[in-house]
Image (cartoon, rainbow, N blue to C red; front, top):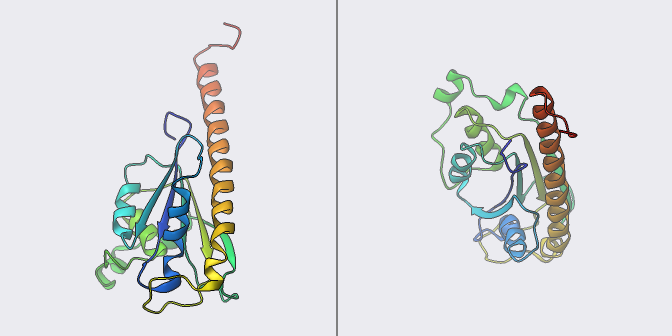
Length: 191
């Protein structure tokens, strides 16, 4: 965990030229002016999934919140929050898998590919959440469908709630770590 109590990265993902695929980009665009807790960063990664994986390699972020259009077999505009278990061995590519897999397309990496690349490069992030929206239209167009557009405000509220909760959780964990470290050194609160 970083020394300031932890950092949260909110990453908008999507292609603005493919209709509802731009959902994540639109949500983070609206978050730019929101009041966020200390240690929370918002970034539009768009189609730069490889960039996101490499940004996570430096270990600065304890929590990653990806916002993206997500096929869930639900009605268009449905929102969901999913927690990703990166401890699952399925996230690690074996050498044979790496050789069999096609070369990564730096502009076409979905969130799963980003996380798999991060793990394969030896990186990690403590917690990964995905705020997803079932798309209606993924055709070439530069606007969200009415159903997905109608879900953006609720998604912004959801991401803000998650940012506050995760920031508070990290701050509490950081305080516990400081107390534990002080106790190990023989320092008490009364000293």
